[in-house]
Amino acid sequence: MEEVWNYQDSWWHMTACLEFAKRHLKDSQTMKYKILWPDETKIEHFGLNAKHHVWWNPGTIPTVKHGGGSIMLWGCFSAAGTGRLVRIEGKMNGAKYREILDENLTKMKTGQKP
Image (cartoon, rainbow, N blue to C red):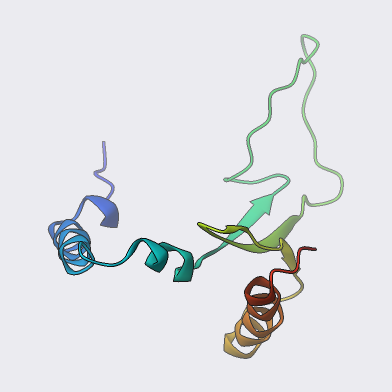
């Protein structure tokens, strides 16, 4: 069996997390409201990342007639709550990421909800 490398288990990652925690031990309680955690994900209808739980009649051969499909989503959260969930059209690049941040961080700062 091939060993899969996971960056979260690496020595460097564990050391970096520990150093981050040590640097921020004395932060004020209000500091947690200033941190925003963004994330993006790709959800596939069919493919390696898609999981399906279906009942098949015996002898049924599964087929995909439309090639599957996927959507890319961006979202964020903080101690103050969750941000908007944004569907990303096309390929993600630096300009598109900055546009998403500009639109959604402004709304998060002012307390607007979608």
